[in-house]
Amino acid sequence: MNPLTCRLIALMGAMLAIAGCHPAPDQATFTAAMTTYLAQRGDLCLGKSAWPIDVTQHEVDVGGRNALQMPVLERLGLVRSGVAEVVVDDEGTKHAMKVRRFDLTEAGQRYLVQRDAKTRDFCAAHLSLDRVVGWKLDRGERGPDTHARVTYTYRVDAAPWTRDGEIQKVFPVVAGVVRGAGTAQLEENFVRTEQGWVAVDLLGT
Image 1 (cartoon, rainbow, N blue to C red):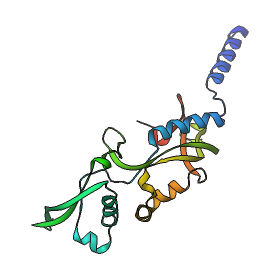
Image 2 (image 1 turned 60 degrees about the vertical axis):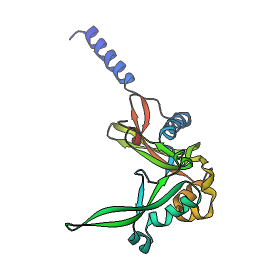
Image 3 (image 1 turned 135 degrees about the horizontal axis):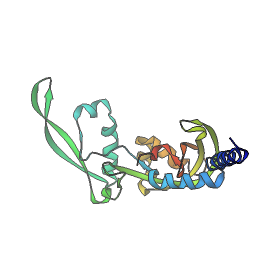
């Protein structure tokens, strides 16, 4: 192999190495990535996607989640209830059973958020970025320093009814997140892609 060919191969190798390099992420990098993530996944929801919601007498007797939460939402005018009859299959024997059926009012419909093409949920607040506190880079499936765990604080745009004392009692997680605005630190995982840093939760969407 002649010297010119060797120099060309070396030059091409150097160019490929440079093309494969990525600048080290900084505060601005993860601020932009977190802002994008929270714009799409910042809704704080109650895990109530299937309406109407039926509450059985057994749930009332044992203090089930919906038995405690739904009457509070009803008092605030977000849901209404009535008696309904459903058919229950009890080990092959079908029988009718009365339930308390809760459905959203017009006021409650305002908090029903379409989270993706197939999923909607009843949501209490939306989080946005306050600031990125820090990050830790790790080796990921794509190589060294391709995974990041980002720590951040957040702002909250909460529904007025989240200030209700009973709501805070029956939805303690919501109450804690709202109280933590500006001070509580959350974490989110990111991976480096050809398009930049993307939250793991957004991959494939």
